[in-house]
Image 1 (cartoon, rainbow, N blue to C red):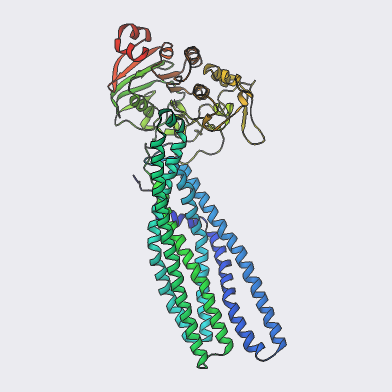
Image 2 (image 1 turned 135 degrees about the vertical axis):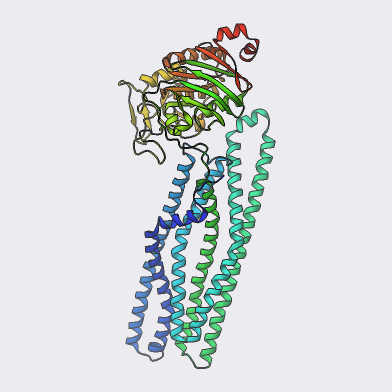
Length: 616
């Protein structure tokens, strides 16, 4: 779904306007190159008529010097004109990548809806690059027009019929090349779309490879990728075919046009209307025209592909946010009272419960979709269809998502780790600088990234409570080098991540592989939990953080969570009896609403359904 965001034309226009200085200078320089190229055959014709045919050595040397200066000038103009054009293209593509990244990471989300992550990467790389190239093609097109005009004027000085032939014939030629670019634009759009989809499927396949192997679904996944890859190949071949027809058609049209100019010039020379030097100049100018016309063929193809890519970029930039910005502020300090009031969203049907400030609340549901819905509403990834989720009496739907996530940290079950050291995956200092657009002042994003909710997350305390005995610095490569102490050390201990570090050769400075694949599932869970605890957020919601650890470790983690979160609101969404045993109260959600609530001990002894859900 699109909002009133930028259109395809807006993306192209803003891309060009943002680099107008580079484009203007590049256009002047490259136009100078084309003027020099057009003057070369004219100068050669003059040399033949005024020096070679007369045998005047002085005139020959003088005109040869003029020709040399012309060559030096056009060479200089081409070198630096091309440099400005390339600079405009690269800067424009970079700016588009920044805009796309900012939109995808916007706390309000929505850009990823209906798109695979690999497809978004393809748009931010391939499509941004194609739109950027338009900024290099524009100076080239201006230079080509200049070359055609100078060539036509030069031909007019040689012969009025030749000049008029070029002046009146060139517009029809340009119109024909534009028509030839229409199929290329359509097929280029399809090509990029299929390529982006194939990239997304490949990324999903690589990310879930272990799971696919575990359930024996490799053949089905491979077959799906082969179909997607074949569709992408077909679209690419069709686009290549369209480009070949486009380039061949343009070359044929320009060849016919140039041959016509040369034929007319030869006829005029045969009838004595122009001199031998003029004939050579006219033939040289006809050959020169092949350059500008070839440039038009390239420019037309780049503009066709750029327009198609601009449309795909616009669809991301104009995607509707999943949630509104919100205008209200949360009270300071945040007490941590969380209230679900008649919430209907997904499988939730009038869900109502309250977590008191400082309470450790357990939420039990046999339906994974219900757990996900609760987390999405808490992290304001989505707003309830009806009802409200409130924090200290303020509806979260009226607060900016970044501000919500600064106070409410949602640690999803499938939180990702990143390539880097173990301690970098747990904590890093919050970067300074101005808040992003649409982000409330005073709220800054977490550096190591939570990756906990899948979207941008506001930070908690800026230094994450690191004690004086610990240090957070940067090594030569700019990576955070934190020592364990204060809240960080307590978080590592509470999550059992200190035991993980003790088994690694370099301890907390051990470099983890991408997504933490060098660790076991239980080790990854403990590090992700330590990261959530280290933020020291006023409200923390954790979903099944110990499914991959053994019972003894799970019991120790449960006690650690209760200890480190004492006095702060914590919501544990889980069916683990070890975790539920340390909670103050348990709310059981069944059928999208609260079925029963009480302490873990009361529910175990008094409710058979609860026992069946938790103890089996």
